Image 1 (cartoon, helix red, strand yellow):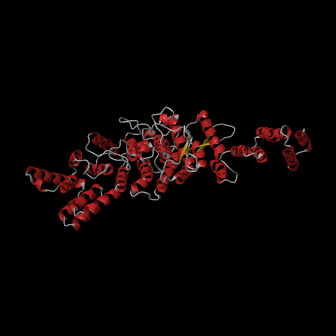
Image 2 (cartoon, rainbow, N blue to C red):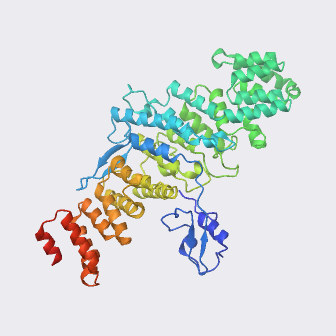
Length: 547
């Protein structure tokens, strides 16, 4: 999942710090190409403890991740469960769909509501890129999952049985049209500025913007072409007539008098993608189309093909080098990564990896290299994995894969000063294994012990009231912090408040009685005894403490 190659984070830090990787006197993190630290300091500093210690002020750039909005949605729609323990500590997961083990009609409706919420909320983003599609990628991924798996409340059958619903396919085409609209308009504008109206018409057609293509044709005097475009309905048989006309042109060598751009227009209107395939095979750099518009063109050229056939056929076209590979939006043409959106399409087309042409594991579907340059940005991966795992449409993650995903996201949240949410995320492990639950509880408690500072901190209220953790966890953490600060009275107060009498007795012995008797700290001991009397302890208990 993580691309820990020569360009890994550790290697970049080593180069920045001037560390020679050929030396044997280096740390193991650098040797193994990964960091063994639990996370970055809140000040975004990393200390390299080599022969010449250096503080490197560099932290991973996670971009404009909408941490809080998506986390609040996950918490809002999560179902609480608990392992049978004395503390009854909650675990969290999204509702299960009909294809998940234990899923019901009601739980599927709840999951669909969560998916709707994810889609709506992720659309409200601040555009931080010149390319709006990079900022909208989270929204596009959630939107695509909703299109491919969402169901009506009245539907009680598996979502895998409704892939060929015409409405679902039309929604997918609308999705491809919207997600490529930015590129389409840019290319139309550039073509018109270059006085190349025919190319502008072609790019409008490739983006499935029929009205725009018709208007450009009319405005530039291509009236007959405008008529062909406006009436190009496969059901009316006009495509066959246009293909017959193209064959006549080829036979009479009239096609040599037609411009290449106009040939592309006529070929597409006749439902023939051979022209595009040949052009891409010969000059892939001049077609000007990415995988989304080529897939959209394929869907319009073959209207009777199902979503499954379209996706798998397109993958075959990529293999035959007649269609652009589905690279991530951020990546260059030399990238070997596959776009997150195409991975989701492939997952759906292969029935969740259960049929021939298996898509792969869930962790590979949501891997960060499919949506961003930073392989350590696991925010989106976590939420998509939660949705897909809830749908039950992919092989479940192994315990090891889930731990890597959760632990990575926890580190990212700590770096973003959202440690209290990191505690929540540690409690989202799946399954009912008592061993895994206890491991999650231990991690959550460790985070609280490390980062909780005061009972007046908003995170204190968040953990108790929203997450539902036992108050004794927070009191124990504050007691340990006060003990480390030498504030024995407050330490004992927190242990008593948390109901841990054994720890309170131990703290009294270690922090009050021992300094008072052995080290001569009589003033502190007398103060403590006076406080016992003020708090209403009976004389016998006080005498025992005095003794």
